[in-house]
Image 1 (cartoon, rainbow, N blue to C red):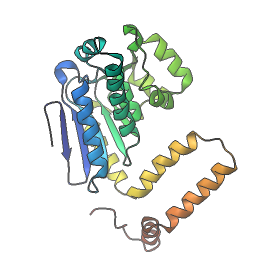
Image 2: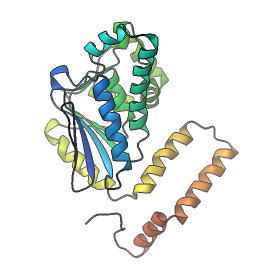
Image 3: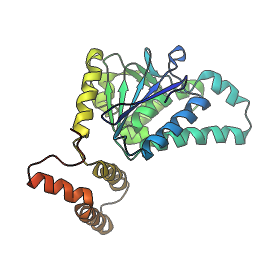
Image 4: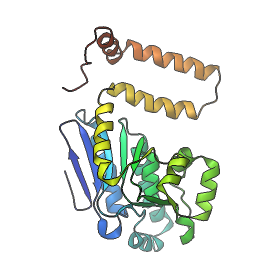
Length: 263
């Protein structure tokens, strides 16, 4: 599957790769690309053959965030039209963040504004030493509202206050310290490291990984009280009794490969 702005491939391992393909505008997104990404992600989420999703980009930049031409058009929109566009972007971020499959971002260059939001919504992020990041919205008299829940979750409120307000650019080393990315990988080794992580993820139970993602979301937003303790006990009991849980335990005890692992 592909269109001019977004390329979608699925390999024999069940790894889907969404590639931003607007290098002439540094992979900035507009309403067309936002709709295409949201639709593609929902299709991949529903495809049982897809085990994980990689997000990549063509060219020197990962994503410059919102396309300036699109933003100029939005300036003339009615309040209702402006809200509809913002809701569409929010849906994209939420769809990627809540995807019930592992997500891996490969950041080869600059990620600005909404591009940082895309990075923050992915489960794992590899970046090259050339990658750079900037929450640049206030330079335009705007705020990073739609992406804020995901960026704050990734780097914490204290760092978010600094970078939301300062709009200063920071490098991959700083992004690693903040927790926005997980590894810095030389550009020539990025594909190899992505393959290593892919094969690692394919050894894990697909339903268990989806449940683990949801567990993190639910636990991080809930006080540690009796209700949470009871809920976590219920969830492990449920997964133990599931077909996948039984298969995983049986495979371990029998010293064989689980059925979900492809040869």
